[in-house]
Amino acid sequence: MCKMLPGVLLLVLAATALAGDKKQLPITAQNANDSVEISAVAYLAKEDVKQVMGAEMPPSVVVVEVTFKPKKELKLFADDFLLRSYKDGQKSTPFAPSQLAGKGGLMITNSGQGGGMMSGGSPNGPIWGGLGGGRPQRMGGDGGAIGNTTDPNLNDTAQKDTNKEKDDPLLAVLKTKALPEKETSEPVKGLLYFPLDGKHKAKDVTLIYEGQAGKLILEFRQ
Image 1 (cartoon, rainbow, N blue to C red):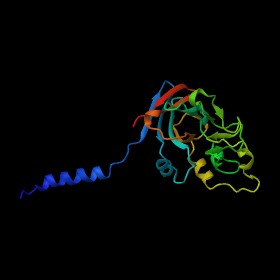
Image 2 (image 1 turned 60 degrees about the vertical axis):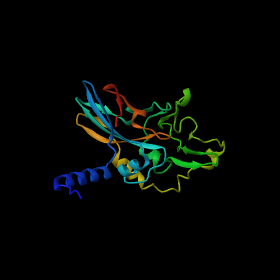
Image 3 (image 1 turned 90 degrees about the horizontal axis):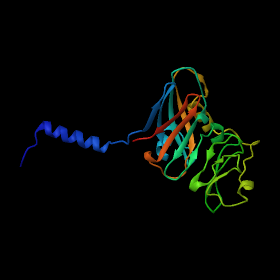
Image 4 (image 1 turned 135 degrees about the vertical axis):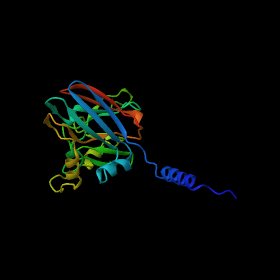
């Protein structure tokens, strides 16, 4: 019987351990111009979103971590960013924390004919849609219902009683981790919360910045 040399045995064991502990690399993107450098990490899978948030998030919500490095004083707003899917044409601006949690926030409903997302009625909700050439809609501004909702009475029966409802504990987490909105000449980092229905790979999605520093397109790669 052939004896394996100690050095070879160690290499085999190390390779086996690495194979068993292999983790998926982050989905990253970056771009820059004369005014700003932006990098981003996308968390598209439900388990990845939960891990980065440390809490359960509503379905059909993905998280993008943005690092914004201005080269001069710039104003930064969450609505400077748009997430687009080349897979099915979805495009959206991010939710504000209060639209996902807290009084009047987003709620997930099931009418028996398919699930959907409802907004608390904010006129400043994120843009959603564009699937199949359809008109993009604003959450809360174009009727409130998003997704596979076919019951015309759903909006009446699924509204929250905001007078009696207590703030969702998730709200504090969302606010703490969110990308700051401010005027800055220093690097800032934070999370953006986008609606994105279905499963998407890195190659499917693109983050678009269009703000005071101009326009940058960040293509995600794994």
